[in-house]
Every structure is written in structure tokens, then in C-alpha cells.
Length: 148
Image (cartoon, rainbow, N blue to C red; front, side, top):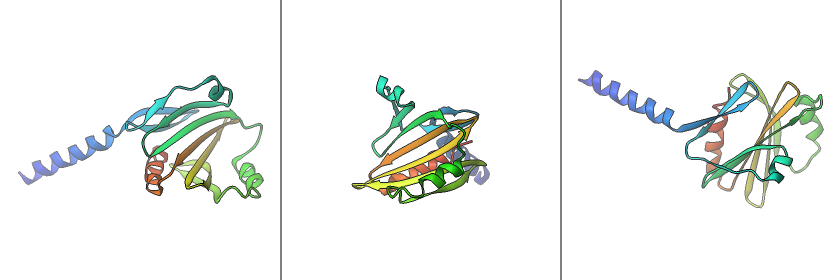
């Protein structure tokens, strides 16, 4: 009986974890999984002209994905060229699930912005998160941990 209860609890936990994500976003050969708590907004012609691919939001966090030509730049070169930009609180290169990404963090008027960049086949895929409550950073990390 204890084994059956443990099995049911494990199954419920597995289902609740998998049910928390609803959509998969393609970033070249990589993917990012979008939580079902987020809604997708329609893009305007201006958004599309700015290379925005999609925009998702909920009460705590929103994010946009942009795709544009890398023009031969590497992540290292982008970070290096940005080091003199005082608007960023942090920047660097990290690996998430074997995917090399550049990251940039800035805060402005109690709003936090975190940007992750991936370059593949001379295309930059930029994921830009915005949130006001630092607790929402957990949502950002959970989304980015789905990067494959």
C-alpha cells in the first residue's frame, strides 16, 4: 500500500511538472518551452519590423524574442563590445543545458531586464525578459532552464 501511495504521489508530481509548460518555441535548432501561465500577444507591424518574433506575458514577467543577423559576430565579441556600456549591471557568457548563451542584466526605475542571446548559423536569437519583482526572476530561470 505504501508503494502504491508513493507511486501515485510520484505520478501526480510528474504530471503537475509537465502540465506547467504549454508551448515550445523554436530558436533555430534549439527550443524554449513556454509555461502555460503565459499568454502570447499579437505582434504589431512595428514589432515585426524590429525583428520581434513573439511576445509572451503574465502578471509577473513578460518576454520578447528577437531574431536578426549576427553579421559575423560571436557571443564573445558582442559581450566584449558591450563591456563599456554602463547601462548593464552584469553581463557575461554562460552555458545552459549545453547551449552557450550571452546574458545581460540591467535595472531601470525598479524594472529588471534580463537578456539572453544565442547565435546559430549567423542568426542571433535574443530573449529579453522584463519584470518588476525580483521574485519573478525564478520564473525567468525556470523558462531558461528549458532551453535545449
